Image 1 (tube, rainbow, N blue to C red):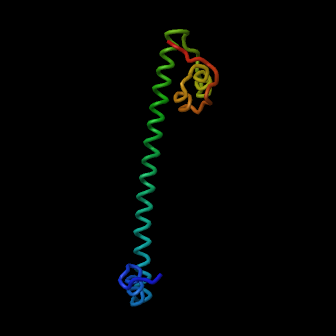
Image 2: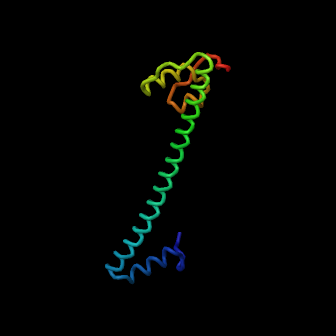
Image 3: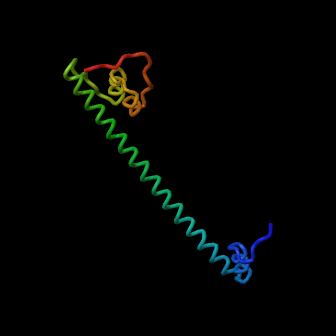
Amino acid sequence: MTERPNSRAAVDRRRDAQMSPSDKARARIELLDERLARLRAERERLIARTDRAERKRDTRRKIVIGGTVLAAVEHEGLPALRTRTDLTQWLDSRLDRPQDRRVFGLPPQSGRLAFMS
């Protein structure tokens, strides 16, 4: 396949052939700076997306804990929960919905009927 004389690659090669070594180095630095700026912007977008997802997950955890505590207070009372582990173990025995269990990192339940209040 032959290269067209006015293709971008051909124009770039002709321009590069006419540039001094220091001009080539400056052009390469510019290209690298532009690439670095694009990568930094992408990194910031990914960080923002991750932060939003974590805030959403944290809000979901708070809603589930609140609902579970209110249901327990109405039915059997609330045991003393002193640590996060105590809370997670207590929730493990009460959460049935897969999406509720997932926000606490609990494994899916098998064969149990959902608690109806």
